[in-house]
Length: 159
Length: 291
Image 1 (cartoon, rainbow over the protein chains, first blue to last red):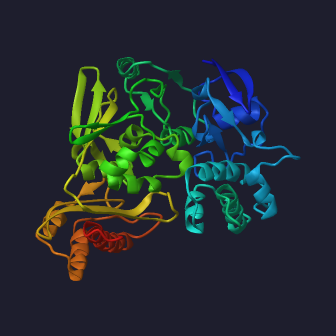
Image 2 (spheres, helix red, strand yellow):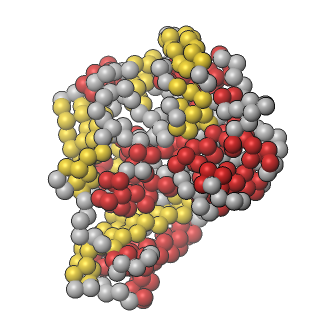
Image 3 (cartoon, one colour):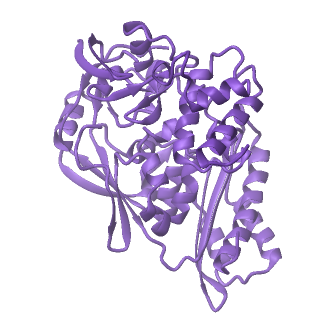
Protein backbone atom coordinates (compact mmCIF):
# COMPACT_ATOMS: atom_id res chain seq x y z
CA UNK A 1 0.00 0.00 0.00
CA UNK A 2 1.51 3.28 -1.12
CA UNK A 3 0.03 6.74 -1.08
CA UNK A 4 0.66 9.93 -3.01
CA UNK A 5 1.54 12.98 -0.97
CA UNK A 6 2.34 16.56 -1.85
CA UNK A 7 4.24 18.69 0.65
CA UNK A 8 6.04 22.00 0.69
CA UNK A 9 9.56 21.81 2.09
CA UNK A 10 11.58 25.00 2.46
CA UNK A 11 9.24 26.73 0.02
CA UNK A 12 9.53 24.09 -2.66
CA UNK A 13 6.74 21.71 -3.70
CA UNK A 14 7.46 17.98 -3.67
CA UNK A 15 5.28 15.06 -4.70
CA UNK A 16 6.07 11.49 -3.80
CA UNK A 17 4.54 8.05 -3.47
CA UNK A 18 5.28 6.60 -0.05
CA UNK A 19 4.42 3.73 2.26
CA UNK A 20 2.28 4.76 5.26
CA UNK A 21 4.94 3.54 7.66
CA UNK A 22 7.64 5.83 6.27
CA UNK A 23 8.81 8.27 8.94
CA UNK A 24 8.92 11.94 8.01
CA UNK A 25 12.59 11.97 9.05
CA UNK A 26 13.39 9.22 6.52
CA UNK A 27 11.22 10.91 3.90
CA UNK A 28 13.19 14.14 4.26
CA UNK A 29 16.58 12.45 4.28
CA UNK A 30 16.19 9.49 1.94
CA UNK A 31 13.36 10.42 -0.41
CA UNK A 32 14.09 14.14 -0.75
CA UNK A 33 17.82 14.01 -0.02
CA UNK A 34 17.58 16.73 2.63
CA UNK A 35 20.13 15.26 5.04
CA UNK A 36 20.40 18.35 7.23
CA UNK A 37 17.72 16.84 9.46
CA UNK A 38 19.57 14.36 11.65
CA UNK A 39 18.26 11.10 13.08
CA UNK A 40 19.41 10.05 16.52
CA UNK A 41 17.14 7.97 18.72
CA UNK A 42 14.04 7.50 16.53
CA UNK A 43 11.74 7.63 19.52
CA UNK A 44 11.39 11.30 20.26
CA UNK A 45 13.96 11.61 23.01
CA UNK A 46 17.06 13.19 21.44
CA UNK A 47 15.53 16.04 19.43
CA UNK A 48 18.02 15.85 16.54
CA UNK A 49 15.26 15.35 13.96
CA UNK A 50 13.19 18.39 15.02
CA UNK A 51 11.73 20.34 12.09
CA UNK A 52 9.04 23.01 11.62
CA UNK A 53 5.65 21.64 10.60
CA UNK A 54 3.15 24.40 9.79
CA UNK A 55 5.26 26.75 11.89
CA UNK A 56 5.58 24.59 15.02
CA UNK A 57 8.61 22.53 16.01
CA UNK A 58 7.88 18.79 15.86
CA UNK A 59 9.83 15.56 15.91
CA UNK A 60 10.05 14.23 12.36
CA UNK A 61 10.80 10.72 13.69
CA UNK A 62 7.44 10.75 15.52
CA UNK A 63 5.48 11.75 12.44
CA UNK A 64 4.49 9.63 9.46
CA UNK A 65 5.21 11.21 6.09
CA UNK A 66 1.66 10.44 4.90
CA UNK A 67 0.26 12.57 7.71
CA UNK A 68 1.88 15.80 6.53
CA UNK A 69 0.26 15.80 3.08
CA UNK A 70 -0.64 19.40 2.22
CA UNK A 71 1.43 20.82 5.06
CA UNK A 72 4.41 23.12 5.12
CA UNK A 73 7.78 21.99 6.42
CA UNK A 74 10.93 23.95 7.14
CA UNK A 75 14.15 22.07 7.81
CA UNK A 76 17.58 23.39 8.76
CA UNK A 77 18.30 23.81 5.04
CA UNK A 78 15.53 26.41 4.95
CA UNK A 79 16.82 28.59 7.79
CA UNK A 80 19.68 30.46 6.18
CA UNK A 81 22.54 30.01 3.79
CA UNK A 82 26.29 29.88 4.22
CA UNK A 83 26.50 33.56 3.33
CA UNK A 84 23.36 34.64 5.14
CA UNK A 85 22.92 32.87 8.44
CA UNK A 86 19.73 33.69 10.30
CA UNK A 87 19.83 35.46 13.68
CA UNK A 88 20.05 32.32 15.80
CA UNK A 89 22.56 30.64 13.49
CA UNK A 90 24.71 33.76 13.77
CA UNK A 91 24.63 33.53 17.57
CA UNK A 92 25.50 29.82 17.44
CA UNK A 93 28.58 30.77 15.42
CA UNK A 94 29.48 33.73 17.63
CA UNK A 95 29.11 31.79 20.89
CA UNK A 96 30.53 28.48 19.64
CA UNK A 97 27.16 26.80 20.20
CA UNK A 98 28.21 23.67 18.32
CA UNK A 99 31.05 21.24 18.08
CA UNK A 100 30.32 18.08 16.08
CA UNK A 101 27.09 19.54 14.74
CA UNK A 102 24.94 16.46 15.10
CA UNK A 103 22.38 18.04 17.44
CA UNK A 104 22.59 21.48 15.80
CA UNK A 105 19.69 21.24 13.31
CA UNK A 106 17.35 20.23 16.14
CA UNK A 107 18.84 22.80 18.51
CA UNK A 108 18.29 25.59 15.97
CA UNK A 109 14.67 24.67 15.20
CA UNK A 110 13.89 24.20 18.90
CA UNK A 111 15.68 27.43 19.78
CA UNK A 112 13.71 29.37 17.17
CA UNK A 113 10.39 27.96 18.41
CA UNK A 114 11.35 28.78 22.02
CA UNK A 115 12.26 32.34 20.97
CA UNK A 116 8.87 32.66 19.29
CA UNK A 117 6.81 31.39 22.24
CA UNK A 118 8.59 32.08 25.52
CA UNK A 119 10.14 35.09 27.29
CA UNK A 120 13.38 33.13 27.97
CA UNK A 121 14.12 35.62 30.71
CA UNK A 122 16.45 33.30 32.62
CA UNK A 123 19.00 30.60 31.83
CA UNK A 124 16.79 28.22 33.79
CA UNK A 125 13.93 28.82 31.37
CA UNK A 126 16.25 28.35 28.38
CA UNK A 127 17.61 25.12 29.84
CA UNK A 128 14.11 23.82 30.55
CA UNK A 129 13.16 24.65 26.97
CA UNK A 130 16.19 22.77 25.65
CA UNK A 131 15.63 19.75 27.88
CA UNK A 132 14.24 17.73 24.97
CA UNK A 133 17.37 18.13 22.85
CA UNK A 134 20.48 16.15 23.66
CA UNK A 135 24.01 17.34 22.92
CA UNK A 136 26.98 15.11 23.68
CA UNK A 137 29.82 17.58 23.17
CA UNK A 138 29.19 21.20 24.10
CA UNK A 139 28.03 20.69 27.66
CA UNK A 140 25.17 23.00 26.61
CA UNK A 141 26.85 26.14 28.02
CA UNK A 142 27.41 27.75 24.64
CA UNK A 143 24.08 26.67 23.23
CA UNK A 144 22.40 28.39 26.18
CA UNK A 145 24.62 31.43 25.62
CA UNK A 146 23.63 31.57 21.94
CA UNK A 147 19.92 31.45 22.73
CA UNK A 148 20.34 33.97 25.55
CA UNK A 149 22.01 36.33 23.06
CA UNK A 150 19.30 35.73 20.45
CA UNK A 151 16.61 36.47 23.07
CA UNK A 152 18.36 39.72 23.98
CA UNK A 153 18.54 40.65 20.29
CA UNK A 154 14.85 39.81 19.88
CA UNK A 155 13.95 42.05 22.85
CA UNK A 156 16.29 44.85 21.85
CA UNK A 157 18.43 44.39 24.96
CA UNK A 158 22.21 44.60 25.15
CA UNK A 159 24.00 41.34 25.93
CA UNK B 1 13.64 1.19 14.66
CA UNK B 2 11.15 1.45 11.79
CA UNK B 3 7.46 0.60 12.07
CA UNK B 4 6.24 -2.71 10.67
CA UNK B 5 3.89 -2.33 7.71
CA UNK B 6 0.28 -1.44 8.43
CA UNK B 7 -2.80 -0.33 6.56
CA UNK B 8 -3.54 3.33 7.03
CA UNK B 9 -6.99 4.89 7.02
CA UNK B 10 -7.97 8.52 7.46
CA UNK B 11 -11.67 8.67 8.34
CA UNK B 12 -13.46 11.99 8.11
CA UNK B 13 -15.94 11.37 10.91
CA UNK B 14 -15.92 9.81 14.36
CA UNK B 15 -18.48 7.24 13.21
CA UNK B 16 -16.29 6.21 10.27
CA UNK B 17 -13.28 5.94 12.61
CA UNK B 18 -15.20 3.66 14.98
CA UNK B 19 -16.29 1.59 11.98
CA UNK B 20 -12.67 1.29 10.80
CA UNK B 21 -11.60 0.10 14.25
CA UNK B 22 -14.46 -2.39 14.44
CA UNK B 23 -13.43 -3.83 11.05
CA UNK B 24 -9.88 -4.32 12.35
CA UNK B 25 -11.13 -6.96 14.81
CA UNK B 26 -9.19 -5.64 17.75
CA UNK B 27 -5.98 -5.21 15.77
CA UNK B 28 -6.47 -1.53 14.94
CA UNK B 29 -4.84 1.43 16.66
CA UNK B 30 -6.12 4.98 16.85
CA UNK B 31 -3.51 7.59 16.08
CA UNK B 32 -4.10 11.16 17.24
CA UNK B 33 -0.90 13.20 17.66
CA UNK B 34 1.07 9.98 17.65
CA UNK B 35 3.57 11.12 20.26
CA UNK B 36 3.13 7.99 22.38
CA UNK B 37 2.13 5.58 19.64
CA UNK B 38 4.95 6.41 17.21
CA UNK B 39 7.76 5.32 19.59
CA UNK B 40 5.86 2.06 20.15
CA UNK B 41 5.54 1.56 16.38
CA UNK B 42 9.18 2.47 15.76
CA UNK B 43 10.31 -0.08 18.33
CA UNK B 44 7.72 -2.55 17.00
CA UNK B 45 6.37 -2.92 20.52
CA UNK B 46 3.04 -2.24 18.82
CA UNK B 47 2.34 -3.87 15.46
CA UNK B 48 -1.26 -3.02 14.57
CA UNK B 49 -2.57 -4.20 11.21
CA UNK B 50 -4.49 -0.94 10.80
CA UNK B 51 -3.68 2.58 11.95
CA UNK B 52 -6.75 4.81 12.11
CA UNK B 53 -5.59 8.42 11.83
CA UNK B 54 -8.22 10.63 13.47
CA UNK B 55 -6.39 13.96 13.15
CA UNK B 56 -8.43 15.07 10.12
CA UNK B 57 -11.80 14.60 11.84
CA UNK B 58 -13.22 18.11 12.18
CA UNK B 59 -14.58 19.64 15.39
CA UNK B 60 -12.50 17.77 17.95
CA UNK B 61 -10.02 20.44 18.99
CA UNK B 62 -12.05 23.14 20.73
CA UNK B 63 -11.57 24.42 24.28
CA UNK B 64 -14.96 25.70 25.42
CA UNK B 65 -16.65 26.91 28.56
CA UNK B 66 -19.76 24.80 29.20
CA UNK B 67 -21.68 25.81 32.32
CA UNK B 68 -19.43 24.83 35.23
CA UNK B 69 -16.92 22.89 33.17
CA UNK B 70 -14.35 23.35 30.43
CA UNK B 71 -15.02 21.00 27.53
CA UNK B 72 -11.86 20.03 25.70
CA UNK B 73 -11.91 18.28 22.34
CA UNK B 74 -9.84 15.09 22.23
CA UNK B 75 -7.58 16.42 19.47
CA UNK B 76 -6.62 19.56 21.38
CA UNK B 77 -2.84 19.72 21.42
CA UNK B 78 -0.87 20.09 24.64
CA UNK B 79 0.53 23.41 23.39
CA UNK B 80 -3.02 24.71 22.86
CA UNK B 81 -3.81 23.93 26.50
CA UNK B 82 -0.50 25.43 27.65
CA UNK B 83 -1.17 28.78 25.95
CA UNK B 84 -4.97 28.93 26.46
CA UNK B 85 -6.29 31.94 28.42
CA UNK B 86 -9.45 30.02 29.24
CA UNK B 87 -7.46 27.15 30.76
CA UNK B 88 -5.27 29.60 32.69
CA UNK B 89 -8.28 31.26 34.31
CA UNK B 90 -10.62 28.26 34.75
CA UNK B 91 -8.24 25.31 35.24
CA UNK B 92 -5.11 26.97 36.67
CA UNK B 93 -3.56 23.70 37.83
CA UNK B 94 -3.71 22.35 34.30
CA UNK B 95 -2.05 25.51 33.10
CA UNK B 96 0.73 25.11 35.66
CA UNK B 97 1.20 21.47 34.72
CA UNK B 98 1.41 21.83 30.94
CA UNK B 99 5.05 22.97 30.68
CA UNK B 100 5.96 19.69 32.42
CA UNK B 101 4.30 17.66 29.66
CA UNK B 102 7.26 16.35 27.64
CA UNK B 103 9.00 18.99 25.52
CA UNK B 104 7.77 21.77 23.26
CA UNK B 105 8.08 19.73 20.05
CA UNK B 106 6.02 16.94 21.62
CA UNK B 107 3.47 19.41 23.02
CA UNK B 108 3.08 20.86 19.54
CA UNK B 109 1.75 17.55 18.29
CA UNK B 110 0.53 15.43 21.22
CA UNK B 111 -3.16 15.58 22.15
CA UNK B 112 -5.14 15.30 25.36
CA UNK B 113 -7.27 12.43 24.02
CA UNK B 114 -4.11 10.58 23.06
CA UNK B 115 -2.42 11.12 26.41
CA UNK B 116 -5.48 9.96 28.36
CA UNK B 117 -5.96 6.91 26.15
CA UNK B 118 -2.27 5.99 26.42
CA UNK B 119 -2.73 6.05 30.23
CA UNK B 120 0.88 6.42 31.25
CA UNK B 121 1.00 6.26 35.07
CA UNK B 122 3.61 9.05 35.18
CA UNK B 123 1.88 11.48 32.79
CA UNK B 124 0.32 14.79 33.80
CA UNK B 125 -2.98 14.84 31.88
CA UNK B 126 -4.29 11.52 33.21
CA UNK B 127 -3.58 12.78 36.74
CA UNK B 128 -5.31 16.09 36.01
CA UNK B 129 -8.35 14.22 34.70
CA UNK B 130 -8.52 12.26 37.95
CA UNK B 131 -7.80 15.37 40.02
CA UNK B 132 -10.58 17.43 38.41
CA UNK B 133 -12.92 14.42 38.31
CA UNK B 134 -13.25 14.91 34.54
CA UNK B 135 -15.86 13.17 32.41
CA UNK B 136 -14.24 11.32 29.53
CA UNK B 137 -16.60 10.95 26.58
CA UNK B 138 -16.12 8.10 24.16
CA UNK B 139 -17.80 7.06 20.95
CA UNK B 140 -18.35 3.37 20.19
CA UNK B 141 -20.37 1.32 17.69
CA UNK B 142 -23.45 1.59 19.93
CA UNK B 143 -23.21 5.31 20.55
CA UNK B 144 -21.59 7.49 23.12
CA UNK B 145 -20.85 7.04 26.79
CA UNK B 146 -19.38 9.13 29.56
CA UNK B 147 -16.71 7.65 31.83
CA UNK B 148 -15.64 9.26 35.13
CA UNK B 149 -11.86 9.73 35.03
CA UNK B 150 -11.59 7.77 38.28
CA UNK B 151 -12.82 4.67 36.44
CA UNK B 152 -11.02 5.26 33.14
CA UNK B 153 -7.50 4.21 34.15
CA UNK B 154 -7.32 0.49 34.86
CA UNK B 155 -3.58 -0.09 35.24
CA UNK B 156 -0.31 1.11 33.70
CA UNK B 157 -0.89 1.89 29.99
CA UNK B 158 -4.38 0.37 30.19
CA UNK B 159 -7.67 2.21 30.01
CA UNK B 160 -11.21 0.86 30.22
CA UNK B 161 -12.12 1.49 26.57
CA UNK B 162 -13.22 -1.28 24.25
CA UNK B 163 -10.95 -1.71 21.21
CA UNK B 164 -13.41 0.13 18.94
CA UNK B 165 -14.13 3.06 21.26
CA UNK B 166 -12.56 6.50 20.76
CA UNK B 167 -12.33 9.40 23.21
CA UNK B 168 -13.74 12.53 21.58
CA UNK B 169 -14.16 15.04 24.43
CA UNK B 170 -13.19 15.55 28.04
CA UNK B 171 -15.15 17.78 30.40
CA UNK B 172 -13.22 19.25 33.31
CA UNK B 173 -15.39 20.66 36.14
CA UNK B 174 -14.13 24.03 37.37
CA UNK B 175 -13.18 24.17 41.06
CA UNK B 176 -14.58 27.66 41.48
CA UNK B 177 -14.15 28.02 45.21
CA UNK B 178 -10.64 26.64 45.29
CA UNK B 179 -8.47 29.69 45.95
CA UNK B 180 -5.54 27.64 47.19
CA UNK B 181 -3.76 25.32 44.77
CA UNK B 182 -0.37 24.02 43.76
CA UNK B 183 1.22 21.55 41.38
CA UNK B 184 4.60 20.00 42.15
CA UNK B 185 6.58 17.54 40.08
CA UNK B 186 10.09 16.11 40.02
CA UNK B 187 11.51 14.36 36.96
CA UNK B 188 15.10 13.32 36.29
CA UNK B 189 15.25 15.75 33.43
CA UNK B 190 12.75 18.59 33.01
CA UNK B 191 9.92 17.35 30.78
CA UNK B 192 10.62 13.66 31.33
CA UNK B 193 8.03 11.42 32.90
CA UNK B 194 7.58 12.23 36.58
CA UNK B 195 9.34 10.39 39.39
CA UNK B 196 6.59 11.77 41.57
CA UNK B 197 3.97 14.47 41.23
CA UNK B 198 1.19 15.93 43.35
CA UNK B 199 -1.62 18.42 42.85
CA UNK B 200 -3.40 20.03 45.80
CA UNK B 201 -6.24 22.50 45.92
CA UNK B 202 -8.76 23.66 48.48
CA UNK B 203 -11.52 26.09 49.30
CA UNK B 204 -11.48 28.14 52.51
CA UNK B 205 -14.28 29.05 54.88
CA UNK B 206 -13.44 31.15 57.93
CA UNK B 207 -9.76 30.58 57.16
CA UNK B 208 -10.21 26.82 57.44
CA UNK B 209 -10.07 24.31 54.62
CA UNK B 210 -13.65 23.47 53.70
CA UNK B 211 -13.16 21.36 50.55
CA UNK B 212 -9.99 19.72 49.28
CA UNK B 213 -8.56 17.82 46.34
CA UNK B 214 -5.35 15.82 46.35
CA UNK B 215 -4.08 13.70 43.47
CA UNK B 216 -0.74 12.01 42.84
CA UNK B 217 0.99 10.20 40.01
CA UNK B 218 4.22 8.40 39.36
CA UNK B 219 3.76 6.51 42.61
CA UNK B 220 1.26 3.84 41.54
CA UNK B 221 0.18 2.07 38.37
CA UNK B 222 -2.51 4.70 37.77
CA UNK B 223 -2.89 8.32 38.85
CA UNK B 224 -5.12 8.56 41.87
CA UNK B 225 -6.89 10.83 44.28
CA UNK B 226 -5.98 10.41 47.94
CA UNK B 227 -9.35 10.69 49.67
CA UNK B 228 -7.97 10.17 53.16
CA UNK B 229 -5.45 12.95 52.68
CA UNK B 230 -8.28 15.15 51.34
CA UNK B 231 -10.37 14.43 54.42
CA UNK B 232 -7.40 15.13 56.67
CA UNK B 233 -7.14 18.63 55.20
CA UNK B 234 -10.72 19.54 56.12
CA UNK B 235 -10.87 22.03 58.96
CA UNK B 236 -7.13 22.71 58.80
CA UNK B 237 -5.80 26.18 59.41
CA UNK B 238 -2.55 27.61 58.15
CA UNK B 239 0.06 26.30 60.54
CA UNK B 240 3.44 25.11 59.48
CA UNK B 241 3.32 21.72 61.24
CA UNK B 242 0.17 20.79 59.35
CA UNK B 243 2.17 20.55 56.13
CA UNK B 244 4.42 17.92 57.70
CA UNK B 245 1.42 15.90 58.90
CA UNK B 246 -0.09 16.17 55.46
CA UNK B 247 3.12 14.87 53.90
CA UNK B 248 2.95 11.79 56.14
CA UNK B 249 -0.67 11.27 55.16
CA UNK B 250 0.24 11.36 51.47
CA UNK B 251 3.17 8.95 52.00
CA UNK B 252 0.83 6.57 53.79
CA UNK B 253 -1.58 6.66 50.86
CA UNK B 254 0.84 5.45 48.17
CA UNK B 255 2.77 2.26 47.51
CA UNK B 256 5.29 2.98 44.77
CA UNK B 257 7.60 0.40 43.25
CA UNK B 258 11.29 0.32 42.35
CA UNK B 259 12.33 0.95 38.80
CA UNK B 260 15.40 1.73 36.74
CA UNK B 261 15.35 5.36 37.92
CA UNK B 262 14.82 5.28 41.68
CA UNK B 263 13.86 3.03 44.56
CA UNK B 264 10.36 2.77 45.98
CA UNK B 265 11.65 4.25 49.21
CA UNK B 266 12.99 7.31 47.41
CA UNK B 267 9.71 7.81 45.57
CA UNK B 268 7.78 7.63 48.82
CA UNK B 269 10.07 10.13 50.46
CA UNK B 270 9.85 12.40 47.42
CA UNK B 271 6.05 12.41 47.16
CA UNK B 272 5.82 13.48 50.80
CA UNK B 273 8.31 16.29 50.30
CA UNK B 274 6.39 17.47 47.24
CA UNK B 275 3.09 17.28 49.13
CA UNK B 276 4.50 19.45 51.91
CA UNK B 277 5.80 21.96 49.39
CA UNK B 278 2.48 21.92 47.52
CA UNK B 279 0.38 22.54 50.63
CA UNK B 280 2.61 25.43 51.67
CA UNK B 281 2.39 26.96 48.20
CA UNK B 282 -1.38 26.43 48.05
CA UNK B 283 -1.81 28.26 51.35
CA UNK B 284 0.29 31.16 50.12
CA UNK B 285 -1.83 31.39 46.99
CA UNK B 286 -5.07 31.19 49.01
CA UNK B 287 -3.88 34.18 51.07
CA UNK B 288 -3.01 36.19 48.00
CA UNK B 289 0.73 35.84 48.56
CA UNK B 290 3.30 34.83 46.00
CA UNK B 291 3.65 31.03 46.27
